[in-house]
Image (cartoon, rainbow, N blue to C red; front, side, top):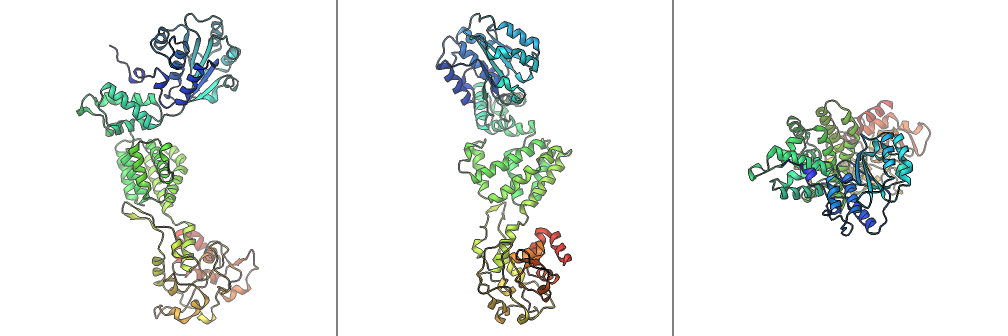
Length: 559
């Protein structure tokens, strides 16, 4: 007996067997039961999701002699002839090879004759977007007002190529991509019926490789049966076999790669990419799977009902939720945005391995770099404007690496150990920028702030006031050789001086600042002395250089 491939052998014969297209089945069944049947239908969707199959089932249901709740019986003579392709009243035409004006004229002449046996004469035209404009024009009048016994069923993967005048005369049905769990479930039914030994993980990998198409999944499954056998426990089809045969990346490899990125472990990420490249994996597909994995991770960590719109199995969803709990959502969003921004660059690159390594390294660096919001928050925490409890919560551990905002205690301790300028004015001659009558305001580029001394910076919980700045007791913890200098601008003012070269109009850090350019929007141009003094503020120089070293150095030179 001639072998028949799984895609043909297990082709659905009823609406109930069509997977993932319940909205199409329900509409067509209701139309049949209510006798509200149109004269033209257009089925739209990607390859292998059931366009032509739905058209064939609909043709059988229209001509079935023993209709059962809108479903064809598949046992009467008409159903058997239509299923075998032998019916004289149901004609299936390939639009790619019958796309001329003469072909449409032949159909126009044939519709004048009633069906020989069935209730309706049905024309199923596949790949209808291939018809020429002349062919459409030849069929236009017939399509608009056909005889009552004629029905047209069109199928296409590119509806934008179909003339709008044709679409307006049809009922359009858009078929959806089939989710991975539904494809894997259908493949399990086929495997059990064919007595094929296969792992669930292997079926999930096949479903993922099918990219939403049931026919593609069945064809891949057929190929894996030929590759592994699957007729006994020793010939079981495993996930590794599918991955090696089709160049995919396993969930374990993707999880390891993503975890390395979140842990800022470039070596671990490069090791995964190296193993994928050396094993002959398709790196273009690996990049697509990587972006999809990070996207699923973001949704699993931020959405309560992620299972409704994630095309993953229950086991994979549990793994995503577990990993999402250990990564801050902002970090996931930064990584995903970085990968999406590099998609075109990767697609146009010639060396996919180098391109993938560079993109991963760049995305990892950008995601873990210091953000402007973090700088403002920590500077104002050092200034005592906001309590340290308002800092971002400590992030959980991933791969033994803990994501935490820069602790105030750590910054303060390192700041206290750094030397101050060597030629300072005395505390009595140093004006203070803080006004006792003006309360601290929330951090913003235009806010006026006052800084504590290095000693008070070591204890951020202490309140900041002019008395604490100028009091000799505040300098008690300084080393003997530490000059008695207290920087008078920190927090948002320091950021304004560093990034924009501007200082608050009310502040006077040096004598030269009293006769500087006029005030504009509450700010004036910072003097060279102010820029140099800000450069010496403990802890600020390191943070500013990490944020934008070029801007910082340029401001110093401009003074």
